[in-house]
Amino acid sequence: MAEIRELTADDWRAWRTLRLSALAEAPQAFGARLADWRGEGDTEARWRARLTDVPFNVLAAVAGHDAGMASATAPDDEGVVDLLSMYVAPSARGLGVGEALVEAVAQWASHQDARTVRLQVFEDNAAAIALYRRCGFLEDGTVQYRRPALKMVRGLRHPSRSA
Image (cartoon, rainbow, N blue to C red; front, side, top):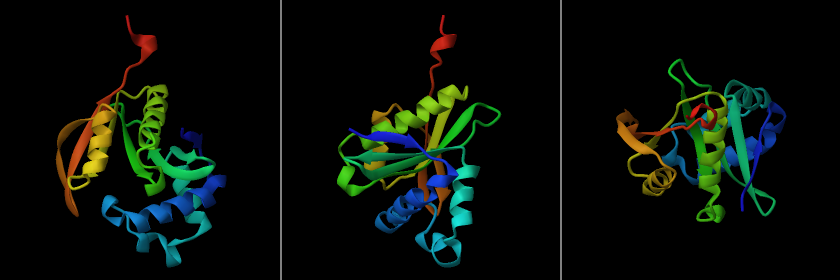
């Protein structure tokens, strides 16, 4: 079972470690590139800023080891939150970590009064697409970003507003 913890800027080292691992292990899955975050781009100030500028950041741990991550933007004017930087380490795949991360984002978004969670996933990332479908996301078109990507959306329920 995954243990989810929300991060602050003070957690930048843990975020950095897993993010760099994600970019090295699965470079084809991300818009960002490992080279963008190494060398001159690999500074404490930049990592702290990333965890501050994006309002919701979580790590998932399995057996005490960080094994997954996800982030979410603040809701836009239409109540849409973007799910970003989703990653599950190979050792934790198939253990429910991805589902736990998606649900953490959805819960947070709901508490922000968002109506929808949106994401983009490259069309050749079949495992991620399958995960998002299991988590209730529906396809909502395509976009070209280095290569074709699906846009996917999931509506959110607000229990306090239901009749």
